[in-house]
Length: 134
Image (cartoon, rainbow, N blue to C red):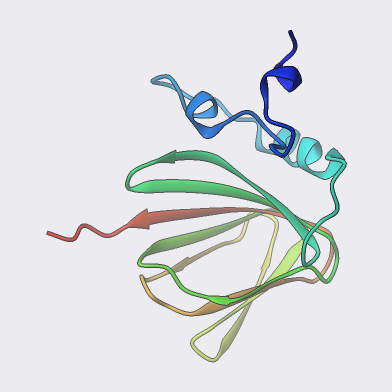
């Protein structure tokens, strides 16, 4: 039985419990971007995404944007780090545009509303570190 056979028909990837199992995780983000772009399903709002790691309070999400792809305005209760791996994006936060190219990083405090637009085909790693409630 292949991995694909073990997944429900509507699941694109192996379940998170399997992806995040173990005590160490080595990621090749550029290969993961290539794999993400090669998936058969259509991109939504000009992007594809996959959570590459999640363990409270930290989540890392990889995005592959088509030129013009976007994430509409949103916020999260955690510290957000946006790291551009390739291409160029524009992040609008607090009435300011931040243009980031490959290697650029933007850090946003919790609850800062922001949106993202790819100025060209781009790859981005978004990390969220939830704030302690205590």
